[in-house]
Image (cartoon, rainbow, N blue to C red):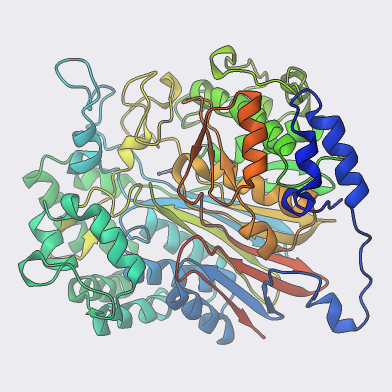
Length: 594
Ligand code: GLY
Protein backbone atom coordinates (compact mmCIF):
# COMPACT_ATOMS: atom_id res chain seq x y z
CA UNK A 1 0.00 0.00 0.00
CA UNK A 2 1.47 3.29 -1.04
CA UNK A 3 0.12 6.67 -0.05
CA UNK A 4 1.37 10.02 -1.29
CA UNK A 5 4.03 11.63 0.89
CA UNK A 6 2.83 13.97 3.60
CA UNK A 7 4.30 16.89 1.79
CA UNK A 8 2.20 16.36 -1.33
CA UNK A 9 -0.92 16.70 0.82
CA UNK A 10 -0.05 20.22 1.88
CA UNK A 11 -1.87 22.55 2.35
CA UNK A 12 -4.94 20.40 2.97
CA UNK A 13 -3.31 18.54 5.81
CA UNK A 14 -2.58 21.69 7.78
CA UNK A 15 -6.29 21.60 8.57
CA UNK A 16 -5.61 18.65 10.83
CA UNK A 17 -3.20 20.33 13.18
CA UNK A 18 -5.18 19.38 16.25
CA UNK A 19 -3.28 16.62 17.99
CA UNK A 20 -6.39 14.95 19.33
CA UNK A 21 -7.70 14.68 15.78
CA UNK A 22 -4.27 13.88 14.45
CA UNK A 23 -5.12 10.48 13.09
CA UNK A 24 -8.74 10.68 12.08
CA UNK A 25 -8.72 14.03 10.29
CA UNK A 26 -5.43 13.41 8.51
CA UNK A 27 -6.54 9.92 7.60
CA UNK A 28 -9.52 11.27 5.67
CA UNK A 29 -7.35 13.79 3.84
CA UNK A 30 -4.82 11.15 2.85
CA UNK A 31 -7.38 8.68 1.64
CA UNK A 32 -9.14 11.35 -0.39
CA UNK A 33 -5.96 12.46 -2.15
CA UNK A 34 -4.58 9.02 -3.01
CA UNK A 35 -4.00 8.67 -6.73
CA UNK A 36 -4.71 5.51 -8.69
CA UNK A 37 -1.64 3.56 -9.81
CA UNK A 38 -0.65 4.21 -13.42
CA UNK A 39 -0.46 1.18 -15.64
CA UNK A 40 2.72 0.54 -17.61
CA UNK A 41 2.30 1.36 -21.30
CA UNK A 42 5.51 -0.09 -22.68
CA UNK A 43 7.44 -3.05 -21.36
CA UNK A 44 10.34 -0.76 -20.55
CA UNK A 45 7.95 1.36 -18.42
CA UNK A 46 7.98 -1.47 -15.95
CA UNK A 47 11.72 -0.98 -15.57
CA UNK A 48 12.03 2.81 -15.84
CA UNK A 49 8.89 4.37 -14.43
CA UNK A 50 8.41 8.00 -15.45
CA UNK A 51 5.85 8.54 -12.71
CA UNK A 52 8.82 8.26 -10.33
CA UNK A 53 10.88 11.29 -9.40
CA UNK A 54 13.93 9.50 -8.02
CA UNK A 55 15.48 6.87 -10.28
CA UNK A 56 17.60 3.94 -9.19
CA UNK A 57 20.52 2.67 -11.26
CA UNK A 58 19.39 -0.31 -13.31
CA UNK A 59 21.38 -3.48 -13.91
CA UNK A 60 20.70 -6.93 -15.26
CA UNK A 61 23.85 -8.87 -14.47
CA UNK A 62 25.08 -7.32 -11.25
CA UNK A 63 25.20 -4.29 -9.01
CA UNK A 64 27.60 -2.83 -6.48
CA UNK A 65 26.62 0.04 -4.19
CA UNK A 66 29.12 1.60 -1.82
CA UNK A 67 30.17 4.89 -0.32
CA UNK A 68 32.89 5.33 -2.94
CA UNK A 69 32.57 5.46 -6.69
CA UNK A 70 36.09 4.06 -7.03
CA UNK A 71 35.29 1.06 -4.81
CA UNK A 72 31.95 0.40 -6.55
CA UNK A 73 33.70 0.41 -9.93
CA UNK A 74 36.26 -2.08 -8.63
CA UNK A 75 33.48 -4.40 -7.43
CA UNK A 76 31.63 -4.12 -10.75
CA UNK A 77 34.85 -4.91 -12.62
CA UNK A 78 35.28 -8.09 -10.56
CA UNK A 79 31.70 -9.10 -11.45
CA UNK A 80 32.40 -8.36 -15.14
CA UNK A 81 35.40 -10.66 -14.94
CA UNK A 82 33.18 -13.50 -13.72
CA UNK A 83 33.70 -13.14 -9.98
CA UNK A 84 30.74 -13.78 -7.72
CA UNK A 85 29.20 -11.41 -5.17
CA UNK A 86 31.62 -12.52 -2.42
CA UNK A 87 34.64 -11.95 -4.68
CA UNK A 88 33.37 -8.48 -5.54
CA UNK A 89 32.58 -7.71 -1.90
CA UNK A 90 36.09 -8.65 -0.76
CA UNK A 91 37.59 -6.44 -3.48
CA UNK A 92 35.30 -3.56 -2.44
CA UNK A 93 36.22 -4.09 1.23
CA UNK A 94 39.95 -3.85 0.50
CA UNK A 95 39.40 -0.88 -1.83
CA UNK A 96 37.45 1.07 0.80
CA UNK A 97 40.36 0.59 3.20
CA UNK A 98 42.37 2.67 0.72
CA UNK A 99 39.88 5.22 -0.64
CA UNK A 100 37.71 5.72 2.46
CA UNK A 101 40.29 5.40 5.22
CA UNK A 102 38.04 6.98 7.84
CA UNK A 103 35.80 3.88 7.87
CA UNK A 104 36.96 1.30 5.33
CA UNK A 105 39.63 -0.72 7.06
CA UNK A 106 41.85 -3.72 7.67
CA UNK A 107 42.17 -2.99 11.39
CA UNK A 108 38.51 -2.77 12.43
CA UNK A 109 35.74 -5.29 12.18
CA UNK A 110 32.24 -5.87 10.94
CA UNK A 111 29.50 -8.15 9.80
CA UNK A 112 28.78 -9.71 6.42
CA UNK A 113 25.54 -11.33 5.38
CA UNK A 114 25.86 -13.64 2.37
CA UNK A 115 22.89 -15.04 0.43
CA UNK A 116 23.84 -18.10 -1.62
CA UNK A 117 21.22 -18.32 -4.31
CA UNK A 118 21.92 -21.84 -5.52
CA UNK A 119 21.75 -23.26 -2.00
CA UNK A 120 18.89 -20.93 -1.07
CA UNK A 121 20.75 -20.18 2.13
CA UNK A 122 21.80 -17.02 3.93
CA UNK A 123 24.67 -16.97 6.41
CA UNK A 124 26.03 -14.27 8.72
CA UNK A 125 29.79 -13.80 9.10
CA UNK A 126 30.81 -12.14 12.37
CA UNK A 127 34.23 -10.53 12.14
CA UNK A 128 33.66 -8.05 14.95
CA UNK A 129 36.63 -6.95 17.06
CA UNK A 130 37.29 -8.77 20.35
CA UNK A 131 38.41 -7.37 23.69
CA UNK A 132 42.08 -8.23 24.31
CA UNK A 133 42.92 -10.82 26.98
CA UNK A 134 44.17 -8.09 29.32
CA UNK A 135 40.90 -6.08 29.10
CA UNK A 136 38.97 -5.67 32.35
CA UNK A 137 35.54 -4.28 33.18
CA UNK A 138 36.61 -0.93 34.63
CA UNK A 139 39.58 -0.22 32.37
CA UNK A 140 38.12 3.11 31.22
CA UNK A 141 37.01 4.33 34.65
CA UNK A 142 39.14 7.09 36.18
CA UNK A 143 40.03 7.70 39.83
CA UNK A 144 36.79 9.68 40.33
CA UNK A 145 34.70 6.80 39.08
CA UNK A 146 33.87 8.50 35.77
CA UNK A 147 34.41 7.19 32.27
CA UNK A 148 37.69 8.48 30.83
CA UNK A 149 36.45 9.19 27.32
CA UNK A 150 39.87 10.12 25.98
CA UNK A 151 41.23 6.76 27.02
CA UNK A 152 38.18 4.93 25.66
CA UNK A 153 38.42 6.64 22.29
CA UNK A 154 41.83 8.09 21.56
CA UNK A 155 44.42 5.59 22.79
CA UNK A 156 45.63 2.18 21.73
CA UNK A 157 43.78 0.78 24.74
CA UNK A 158 40.61 1.71 22.83
CA UNK A 159 41.45 -0.85 20.14
CA UNK A 160 39.74 -4.20 19.95
CA UNK A 161 41.51 -7.11 18.25
CA UNK A 162 40.77 -6.45 14.56
CA UNK A 163 38.63 -8.89 12.58
CA UNK A 164 38.46 -7.50 9.04
CA UNK A 165 41.31 -9.38 7.34
CA UNK A 166 40.25 -12.70 8.90
CA UNK A 167 36.62 -11.98 7.96
CA UNK A 168 37.39 -11.27 4.31
CA UNK A 169 39.64 -14.30 4.01
CA UNK A 170 36.99 -16.51 5.62
CA UNK A 171 34.28 -15.25 3.24
CA UNK A 172 36.53 -15.76 0.24
CA UNK A 173 37.77 -19.22 1.17
CA UNK A 174 34.29 -20.49 1.91
CA UNK A 175 32.10 -18.66 -0.59
CA UNK A 176 34.29 -16.91 -3.17
CA UNK A 177 35.87 -18.15 -6.37
CA UNK A 178 38.92 -15.91 -6.91
CA UNK A 179 42.23 -15.59 -5.04
CA UNK A 180 43.01 -13.04 -2.34
CA UNK A 181 45.83 -11.79 -4.55
CA UNK A 182 43.43 -11.05 -7.42
CA UNK A 183 41.04 -9.20 -5.13
CA UNK A 184 43.63 -7.15 -3.26
CA UNK A 185 45.33 -6.06 -6.49
CA UNK A 186 42.98 -3.15 -7.38
CA UNK A 187 43.26 -1.72 -3.84
CA UNK A 188 47.03 -2.17 -3.90
CA UNK A 189 47.32 -0.27 -7.19
CA UNK A 190 45.32 2.66 -5.83
CA UNK A 191 47.41 2.76 -2.66
CA UNK A 192 50.56 2.81 -4.82
CA UNK A 193 49.41 5.22 -7.52
CA UNK A 194 47.22 7.36 -5.31
CA UNK A 195 43.74 8.77 -5.73
CA UNK A 196 42.48 12.30 -6.06
CA UNK A 197 41.36 13.76 -2.75
CA UNK A 198 37.74 14.93 -2.75
CA UNK A 199 35.85 17.54 -0.70
CA UNK A 200 34.29 14.87 1.50
CA UNK A 201 37.68 13.59 2.61
CA UNK A 202 38.97 17.12 3.20
CA UNK A 203 35.91 17.87 5.32
CA UNK A 204 36.18 14.79 7.53
CA UNK A 205 39.96 15.21 7.97
CA UNK A 206 39.31 18.80 9.07
CA UNK A 207 36.68 17.60 11.53
CA UNK A 208 39.09 15.06 13.05
CA UNK A 209 42.30 17.04 12.55
CA UNK A 210 43.02 17.63 16.24
CA UNK A 211 42.87 13.92 16.98
CA UNK A 212 44.82 12.87 13.89
CA UNK A 213 47.61 15.39 14.39
CA UNK A 214 48.31 14.06 17.89
CA UNK A 215 49.96 11.01 16.35
CA UNK A 216 53.25 11.42 14.48
CA UNK A 217 52.73 8.36 12.30
CA UNK A 218 49.21 9.48 11.34
CA UNK A 219 50.70 12.86 10.38
CA UNK A 220 53.34 11.16 8.25
CA UNK A 221 50.87 8.85 6.50
CA UNK A 222 47.67 10.87 6.13
CA UNK A 223 49.05 14.43 5.86
CA UNK A 224 51.59 16.21 3.72
CA UNK A 225 55.01 17.42 4.91
CA UNK A 226 54.68 19.32 8.19
CA UNK A 227 51.34 17.62 8.96
CA UNK A 228 49.54 19.84 6.45
CA UNK A 229 46.20 18.43 5.27
CA UNK A 230 45.72 17.38 1.66
CA UNK A 231 43.44 19.63 -0.38
CA UNK A 232 40.73 18.74 -2.90
CA UNK A 233 42.22 17.70 -6.22
CA UNK A 234 45.60 16.61 -4.82
CA UNK A 235 46.90 13.08 -5.27
CA UNK A 236 47.05 11.02 -2.07
CA UNK A 237 49.38 8.03 -2.17
CA UNK A 238 49.74 5.43 0.60
CA UNK A 239 53.05 3.59 0.04
CA UNK A 240 53.07 1.93 3.49
CA UNK A 241 49.56 0.62 3.00
CA UNK A 242 50.56 -0.61 -0.48
CA UNK A 243 53.41 -2.60 1.11
CA UNK A 244 50.98 -4.04 3.67
CA UNK A 245 48.51 -5.00 0.95
CA UNK A 246 51.28 -6.59 -1.12
CA UNK A 247 52.34 -8.61 1.92
CA UNK A 248 48.76 -9.69 2.71
CA UNK A 249 48.16 -10.70 -0.87
CA UNK A 250 51.09 -13.12 -0.51
CA UNK A 251 50.73 -14.22 3.11
CA UNK A 252 46.97 -13.92 3.65
CA UNK A 253 45.42 -13.52 7.10
CA UNK A 254 48.31 -15.44 8.72
CA UNK A 255 50.55 -12.52 7.77
CA UNK A 256 48.23 -10.18 9.63
CA UNK A 257 47.60 -12.28 12.73
CA UNK A 258 50.96 -14.02 13.12
CA UNK A 259 53.46 -12.52 10.67
CA UNK A 260 55.05 -9.12 10.12
CA UNK A 261 51.86 -7.09 10.54
CA UNK A 262 51.14 -8.80 13.87
CA UNK A 263 54.65 -7.97 15.07
CA UNK A 264 54.26 -4.31 14.10
CA UNK A 265 50.87 -4.07 15.83
CA UNK A 266 52.22 -5.64 19.02
CA UNK A 267 55.29 -3.40 19.04
CA UNK A 268 53.06 -0.32 18.75
CA UNK A 269 50.85 -1.65 21.54
CA UNK A 270 53.84 -2.18 23.83
CA UNK A 271 55.18 1.30 23.14
CA UNK A 272 51.78 2.96 23.42
CA UNK A 273 50.07 1.25 26.39
CA UNK A 274 47.81 -0.78 24.12
CA UNK A 275 46.61 -4.17 25.27
CA UNK A 276 46.72 -6.32 22.14
CA UNK A 277 49.34 -9.08 22.30
CA UNK A 278 50.52 -11.65 19.79
CA UNK A 279 48.35 -14.17 21.66
CA UNK A 280 45.27 -11.97 21.13
CA UNK A 281 45.95 -11.81 17.41
CA UNK A 282 46.66 -15.52 17.18
CA UNK A 283 43.39 -16.33 18.96
CA UNK A 284 41.16 -14.09 16.83
CA UNK A 285 38.31 -16.10 15.33
CA UNK A 286 35.70 -15.37 12.69
CA UNK A 287 32.29 -16.86 13.36
CA UNK A 288 29.66 -18.03 10.96
CA UNK A 289 26.21 -17.59 12.46
CA UNK A 290 22.62 -18.14 11.46
CA UNK A 291 20.94 -14.83 10.63
CA UNK A 292 18.09 -13.42 12.70
CA UNK A 293 14.85 -14.07 10.80
CA UNK A 294 11.65 -12.08 10.80
CA UNK A 295 8.57 -11.60 8.66
CA UNK A 296 6.95 -8.34 7.70
CA UNK A 297 4.14 -7.70 5.24
CA UNK A 298 4.81 -10.95 3.37
CA UNK A 299 8.59 -10.50 3.19
CA UNK A 300 11.23 -12.55 4.97
CA UNK A 301 13.83 -10.44 6.77
CA UNK A 302 17.34 -11.90 7.26
CA UNK A 303 19.62 -9.79 9.37
CA UNK A 304 22.57 -9.71 11.74
CA UNK A 305 22.36 -11.60 15.06
CA UNK A 306 24.19 -10.60 18.29
CA UNK A 307 26.82 -9.39 19.01
CA UNK A 308 25.09 -6.85 16.83
CA UNK A 309 21.91 -5.49 18.34
CA UNK A 310 20.89 -4.37 14.86
CA UNK A 311 19.06 -7.43 13.58
CA UNK A 312 17.23 -8.25 16.78
CA UNK A 313 15.85 -4.73 17.17
CA UNK A 314 15.11 -4.28 13.47
CA UNK A 315 12.83 -7.30 13.56
CA UNK A 316 11.38 -6.27 16.92
CA UNK A 317 10.48 -2.84 15.51
CA UNK A 318 8.93 -4.26 12.34
CA UNK A 319 6.89 -6.66 14.50
CA UNK A 320 5.61 -3.76 16.61
CA UNK A 321 4.70 -1.72 13.54
CA UNK A 322 2.74 -4.66 12.18
CA UNK A 323 0.61 -4.63 15.35
CA UNK A 324 -0.52 -1.04 14.78
CA UNK A 325 -3.38 0.02 12.50
CA UNK A 326 -1.28 1.88 9.93
CA UNK A 327 -3.23 1.10 6.75
CA UNK A 328 -4.29 4.69 6.24
CA UNK A 329 -1.27 6.50 7.58
CA UNK A 330 0.88 8.24 4.99
CA UNK A 331 4.62 7.92 4.59
CA UNK A 332 6.33 10.98 6.09
CA UNK A 333 3.27 12.04 8.08
CA UNK A 334 3.47 13.20 11.68
CA UNK A 335 1.31 10.21 12.65
CA UNK A 336 3.77 7.77 11.10
CA UNK A 337 6.76 9.50 12.66
CA UNK A 338 5.07 9.46 16.07
CA UNK A 339 4.31 5.74 15.90
CA UNK A 340 7.80 4.94 14.67
CA UNK A 341 9.30 6.96 17.51
CA UNK A 342 7.24 5.09 20.10
CA UNK A 343 8.52 1.86 18.56
CA UNK A 344 12.15 3.06 18.55
CA UNK A 345 12.02 3.93 22.25
CA UNK A 346 10.71 0.50 23.23
CA UNK A 347 13.41 -1.26 21.21
CA UNK A 348 16.31 0.88 22.46
CA UNK A 349 15.30 0.49 26.09
CA UNK A 350 15.50 -3.28 25.63
CA UNK A 351 18.87 -2.86 23.96
CA UNK A 352 20.15 -1.05 27.02
CA UNK A 353 19.41 -4.02 29.26
CA UNK A 354 19.42 -7.24 27.32
CA UNK A 355 21.98 -7.03 24.53
CA UNK A 356 25.59 -8.17 24.63
CA UNK A 357 27.88 -10.83 23.20
CA UNK A 358 25.91 -14.11 23.43
CA UNK A 359 29.15 -16.02 24.12
CA UNK A 360 29.31 -14.23 27.47
CA UNK A 361 25.74 -13.33 28.44
CA UNK A 362 22.31 -14.81 27.82
CA UNK A 363 20.67 -12.64 25.17
CA UNK A 364 16.91 -13.15 24.87
CA UNK A 365 17.06 -12.72 21.10
CA UNK A 366 14.30 -15.22 20.44
CA UNK A 367 12.01 -13.48 22.90
CA UNK A 368 12.74 -9.99 21.57
CA UNK A 369 11.92 -10.95 17.98
CA UNK A 370 8.77 -12.89 18.88
CA UNK A 371 5.45 -11.60 17.57
CA UNK A 372 3.86 -12.22 20.98
CA UNK A 373 6.32 -9.91 22.68
CA UNK A 374 5.78 -7.23 20.01
CA UNK A 375 2.04 -7.48 20.57
CA UNK A 376 2.52 -6.95 24.30
CA UNK A 377 4.81 -3.95 23.81
CA UNK A 378 2.68 -2.26 21.17
CA UNK A 379 -0.50 -2.46 23.28
CA UNK A 380 0.71 0.58 25.18
CA UNK A 381 1.41 2.71 22.11
CA UNK A 382 -1.10 5.51 21.74
CA UNK A 383 -1.73 7.19 18.39
CA UNK A 384 -2.21 10.50 20.10
CA UNK A 385 0.01 10.61 23.15
CA UNK A 386 3.73 10.40 23.69
CA UNK A 387 5.05 7.94 26.25
CA UNK A 388 7.98 9.81 27.85
CA UNK A 389 11.21 7.80 27.84
CA UNK A 390 11.27 7.94 31.65
CA UNK A 391 8.12 5.80 31.69
CA UNK A 392 9.50 3.20 29.31
CA UNK A 393 11.35 0.41 31.09
CA UNK A 394 13.03 -2.63 29.57
CA UNK A 395 10.55 -5.44 28.93
CA UNK A 396 10.91 -9.06 29.93
CA UNK A 397 11.15 -10.98 26.68
CA UNK A 398 11.03 -14.71 27.31
CA UNK A 399 12.95 -17.40 25.47
CA UNK A 400 16.67 -16.98 25.91
CA UNK A 401 19.00 -18.09 23.25
CA UNK A 402 30.50 7.99 14.27
CA UNK A 403 30.41 8.12 14.19
CA UNK A 404 31.46 6.30 11.13
CA UNK A 405 31.19 2.98 9.63
CA UNK A 406 30.49 2.06 6.05
CA UNK A 407 28.18 -0.31 4.23
CA UNK A 408 28.20 -1.88 0.79
CA UNK A 409 25.80 -4.19 -1.02
CA UNK A 410 26.64 -6.46 -3.95
CA UNK A 411 24.63 -8.79 -6.18
CA UNK A 412 25.94 -10.97 -8.97
CA UNK A 413 24.20 -12.38 -12.04
CA UNK A 414 23.29 -15.62 -10.23
CA UNK A 415 21.47 -13.66 -7.54
CA UNK A 416 24.08 -14.22 -4.81
CA UNK A 417 24.12 -11.25 -2.45
CA UNK A 418 26.51 -9.69 0.02
CA UNK A 419 25.38 -7.08 2.51
CA UNK A 420 28.40 -5.89 4.50
CA UNK A 421 28.88 -3.26 7.21
CA UNK A 422 32.32 -2.69 8.75
CA UNK A 423 33.96 -0.03 10.85
CA UNK A 424 36.85 1.49 12.77
CA UNK A 425 34.08 2.82 15.06
CA UNK A 426 34.62 6.60 14.88
CA UNK A 427 36.04 8.55 11.93
CA UNK A 428 39.61 7.24 11.56
CA UNK A 429 39.14 5.08 14.67
CA UNK A 430 41.55 5.95 17.46
CA UNK A 431 43.47 8.22 15.05
CA UNK A 432 46.59 6.18 15.76
CA UNK A 433 48.50 4.62 12.86
CA UNK A 434 50.61 1.50 13.43
CA UNK A 435 54.13 2.53 12.35
CA UNK A 436 55.23 1.20 8.99
CA UNK A 437 51.87 -0.31 8.03
CA UNK A 438 49.62 2.57 6.90
CA UNK A 439 46.93 1.04 9.15
CA UNK A 440 44.82 3.07 11.55
CA UNK A 441 43.72 1.33 14.74
CA UNK A 442 40.05 1.10 15.62
CA UNK A 443 38.50 2.49 18.84
CA UNK A 444 35.74 -0.08 19.06
CA UNK A 445 36.30 -0.84 22.77
CA UNK A 446 34.07 2.25 23.28
CA UNK A 447 31.14 0.20 21.99
CA UNK A 448 31.25 -1.67 25.30
CA UNK A 449 29.48 -0.13 28.30
CA UNK A 450 32.50 1.31 30.11
CA UNK A 451 30.21 2.02 33.07
CA UNK A 452 26.75 0.48 33.39
CA UNK A 453 24.10 3.17 32.92
CA UNK A 454 26.53 5.75 31.48
CA UNK A 455 26.02 6.65 27.83
CA UNK A 456 28.85 5.89 25.39
CA UNK A 457 29.95 8.24 22.62
CA UNK A 458 26.72 7.54 20.69
CA UNK A 459 24.66 8.42 23.77
CA UNK A 460 23.72 4.76 24.03
CA UNK A 461 23.11 3.56 27.55
CA UNK A 462 24.35 0.04 28.08
CA UNK A 463 23.83 -2.59 30.72
CA UNK A 464 25.90 -5.24 32.44
CA UNK A 465 25.27 -7.49 29.43
CA UNK A 466 27.65 -5.27 27.45
CA UNK A 467 30.33 -4.82 30.13
CA UNK A 468 33.98 -5.28 29.14
CA UNK A 469 35.32 -8.81 29.51
CA UNK A 470 38.47 -10.27 27.94
CA UNK A 471 37.76 -11.84 24.53
CA UNK A 472 34.18 -10.56 24.45
CA UNK A 473 32.86 -8.75 21.38
CA UNK A 474 31.45 -5.26 21.99
CA UNK A 475 27.79 -4.76 21.19
CA UNK A 476 27.17 -3.19 17.79
CA UNK A 477 24.29 -1.55 15.98
CA UNK A 478 25.45 -2.59 12.52
CA UNK A 479 22.51 -4.05 10.61
CA UNK A 480 23.43 -5.55 7.25
CA UNK A 481 20.13 -6.94 5.99
CA UNK A 482 18.79 -9.09 3.16
CA UNK A 483 15.09 -9.45 2.35
CA UNK A 484 13.46 -12.33 0.48
CA UNK A 485 10.10 -12.37 -1.21
CA UNK A 486 8.53 -15.77 -1.84
CA UNK A 487 11.93 -17.27 -1.00
CA UNK A 488 13.71 -15.23 -3.67
CA UNK A 489 16.18 -12.37 -3.10
CA UNK A 490 14.44 -9.01 -3.03
CA UNK A 491 16.59 -6.47 -1.19
CA UNK A 492 20.02 -5.88 0.34
CA UNK A 493 20.67 -2.85 2.48
CA UNK A 494 22.63 -1.40 5.39
CA UNK A 495 24.17 1.82 6.60
CA UNK A 496 26.74 3.48 8.85
CA UNK A 497 25.54 5.80 11.61
CA UNK A 498 26.37 4.31 15.02
CA UNK A 499 23.23 4.24 17.13
CA UNK A 500 21.23 5.57 14.16
CA UNK A 501 21.90 2.51 12.03
CA UNK A 502 18.95 0.46 13.27
CA UNK A 503 16.35 3.21 12.86
CA UNK A 504 17.70 4.12 9.40
CA UNK A 505 17.50 0.52 8.16
CA UNK A 506 14.03 0.20 9.71
CA UNK A 507 12.74 3.27 7.84
CA UNK A 508 14.29 2.01 4.61
CA UNK A 509 12.48 -1.33 4.96
CA UNK A 510 9.17 0.31 5.88
CA UNK A 511 9.43 2.69 2.91
CA UNK A 512 10.09 -0.16 0.48
CA UNK A 513 8.19 -3.11 1.96
CA UNK A 514 5.16 -1.20 3.21
CA UNK A 515 4.96 2.05 1.24
CA UNK A 516 6.13 0.37 -1.96
CA UNK A 517 8.64 3.11 -2.76
CA UNK A 518 11.37 2.43 -5.27
CA UNK A 519 14.87 2.15 -3.72
CA UNK A 520 15.89 5.68 -4.67
CA UNK A 521 12.71 7.26 -3.34
CA UNK A 522 13.06 5.28 -0.13
CA UNK A 523 16.74 6.13 0.27
CA UNK A 524 16.18 9.83 -0.36
CA UNK A 525 13.12 10.12 1.92
CA UNK A 526 13.72 12.18 5.09
CA UNK A 527 14.55 10.20 8.20
CA UNK A 528 14.09 10.58 11.94
CA UNK A 529 15.78 8.98 14.94
CA UNK A 530 15.03 8.35 18.61
CA UNK A 531 17.01 6.03 20.88
CA UNK A 532 15.01 6.17 24.13
CA UNK A 533 17.75 8.16 25.91
CA UNK A 534 18.11 11.10 25.51
CA UNK A 535 14.37 11.71 25.10
CA UNK A 536 14.85 13.73 21.93
CA UNK A 537 13.43 13.17 18.47
CA UNK A 538 16.11 13.89 15.87
CA UNK A 539 14.84 14.94 12.46
CA UNK A 540 16.63 15.60 9.20
CA UNK A 541 16.25 19.04 7.76
CA UNK A 542 14.01 17.91 4.89
CA UNK A 543 11.31 16.51 7.21
CA UNK A 544 8.18 18.53 6.36
CA UNK A 545 7.79 21.63 8.52
CA UNK A 546 4.10 20.97 9.08
CA UNK A 547 4.88 17.45 10.35
CA UNK A 548 7.40 18.92 12.76
CA UNK A 549 4.80 21.44 13.94
CA UNK A 550 2.36 18.61 14.63
CA UNK A 551 4.96 16.64 16.53
CA UNK A 552 5.92 19.68 18.59
CA UNK A 553 2.27 20.24 19.45
CA UNK A 554 2.16 16.67 20.70
CA UNK A 555 5.00 17.54 23.08
CA UNK A 556 8.04 16.16 21.28
CA UNK A 557 11.38 17.73 21.98
CA UNK A 558 12.79 17.94 18.48
CA UNK A 559 16.35 18.54 17.35
CA UNK A 560 17.55 19.06 13.83
CA UNK A 561 20.07 16.37 13.02
CA UNK A 562 22.84 16.13 10.47
CA UNK A 563 21.86 13.58 7.84
CA UNK A 564 20.97 10.18 9.25
CA UNK A 565 22.81 7.20 7.83
CA UNK A 566 24.09 6.43 4.36
CA UNK A 567 22.10 3.49 3.03
CA UNK A 568 23.56 1.50 0.14
CA UNK A 569 20.72 -0.58 -1.25
CA UNK A 570 19.93 -3.03 -4.05
CA UNK A 571 16.45 -4.25 -4.93
CA UNK A 572 15.55 -7.07 -7.33
CA UNK A 573 12.29 -7.18 -9.19
CA UNK A 574 11.36 -9.33 -12.19
CA UNK A 575 15.00 -10.12 -12.93
CA UNK A 576 16.08 -6.46 -12.87
CA UNK A 577 18.50 -5.07 -10.26
CA UNK A 578 17.85 -1.57 -8.91
CA UNK A 579 20.68 0.15 -7.05
CA UNK A 580 20.54 3.28 -4.92
CA UNK A 581 23.50 5.00 -3.29
CA UNK A 582 22.54 7.37 -0.51
CA UNK A 583 22.91 11.02 -1.57
CA UNK A 584 23.62 11.91 2.07
CA UNK A 585 27.33 11.18 1.52
CA UNK A 586 29.10 12.64 -1.50
CA UNK A 587 30.76 10.10 -3.84
CA UNK A 588 28.56 7.12 -2.94
CA UNK A 589 27.68 5.28 -6.13
CA UNK A 590 25.61 2.41 -7.46
CA UNK A 591 27.41 0.79 -10.39
CA UNK A 592 25.49 -1.64 -12.59
CA UNK A 593 26.72 -4.56 -14.66
CA UNK A 594 24.63 -5.03 -17.82
N1 GLY B 1 30.76 1.16 16.05
C1 GLY B 1 29.38 1.31 15.89
C2 GLY B 1 28.64 0.03 15.96
O1 GLY B 1 29.22 -1.03 15.81
O2 GLY B 1 27.46 0.06 16.19
